[in-house]
Length: 295
Image: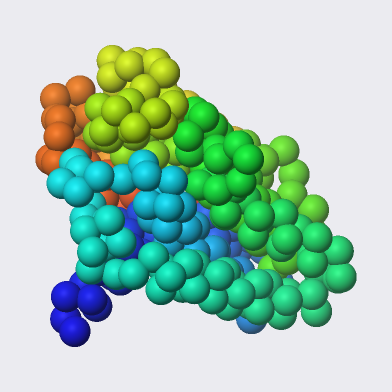
């Protein structure tokens, strides 16, 4: 029993979940810093939707990669319960669609504030969660996973959440912050694919790490971290010019050490770097929230 529980927890990939939390937290910080009246229940539903959609995508990745023969026992990454025989493929398939259904249920609650057109938006997000690993052109297998992360863990959660909880359209400042956070989130996948590049190449997965090679991914990690933080500077200066010191300090304290680790670590050790990258992203998002509460 405990073995199965552990397998389900591992399938959720808890190390990566801060990525979905960070965008919704950042949107709240930007909204509070702009002196908006916050729709708190809308924010709660946005958070639930984001987390459940990511868990569904993680479940789907495990199921569809197993189904297509792309996972092997003893891989460098986290233990795959279906591949290792801890969980049945059918159970993982049902869990994928059940969790996605729960996410869509939370999303339907947002219609009250956003209108019926959110059904179409939710459908696109749900399809994207599956398209990462399934469909005629799975994004994760064709070097488009990082692009998907920027879109669906940066732009979509921050801009959509900001609009839903404030009723105001995002400005170019929020767009820059959303793109910046998306680049920081993409680094979680950069680490993941850098770690798995040999396993992925052996089974025909054409991730960005397989296409570009390990050295290029180390450089991409550094570029994403630098550009990601830089693109949030307008958001800080729009709140208070003195707050521009925060992204500089965050880069030196949070992201620069991670860039150094990325250039030196390999194999299973990268699992810890993956978790640290996600935590750094959510910690950075919390600085927006703290600033919003203080202003």
